[in-house]
Image (cartoon, rainbow, N blue to C red; front, side, top):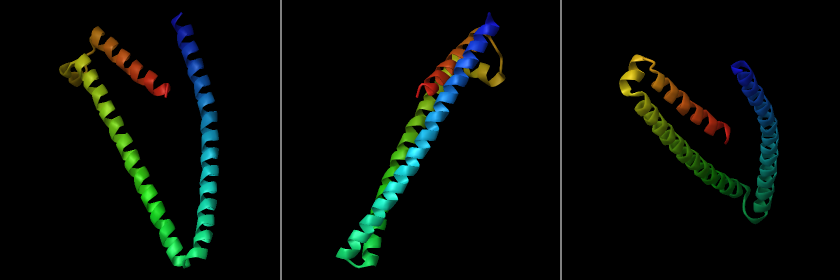
Length: 131
């Protein structure tokens, strides 16, 4: 019974991984096309600006725009990482509270601590797979 259950869970996870990897390839292809389109748009913007101002001024203007856009993306990414770190720290505190600091440090395995750790780890993995 347990063997069949483990087999079923593994088959579902492998099927889910195959489905997600196909989506990852499509996502990568879409991102490459988006980058190519933005490169063409920047070249067009540069050519249009050179009719209005000198070429070096147009290049500096485009570089400044890209610099500000890059900085905004970096700041947004850093704030997302910080949120994830605080979420991970909260989970670690919950695990320590469930297992108890002495049990986690010595590695003793009480049945309640083992079940609590398995439940918390299952919740963490389940949440990460559903994103």
